[in-house]
Length: 117
Image (cartoon, rainbow, N blue to C red; front, side, top):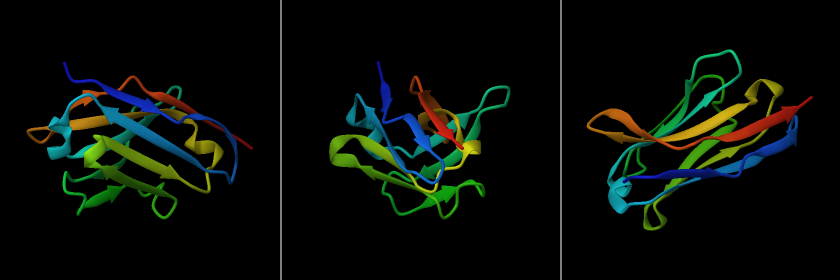
């Protein structure tokens, strides 16, 4: 059973930073693309950032470009999301996901990020 476990969420003031982590229970994901998504109350889940398994390709939502950075440490089966210059509109539950055969198939339980103004 593959498990993804996020951590690092919390309450932060606008302009602050947080670093999310997502640990995978299997080394399988060292060969998989990984992504971060978020879901705010009353809104659909949206893509935030993604990274290829080798770490040589990344993608970001326009709303977070220049503020968020995705990275990974395959030796630790962990992917990170560094979030800087946080805004109240970044408030959401953040999920990491692992890609299998081109689709995000495995999901973590989510971690709450709340940005106060």
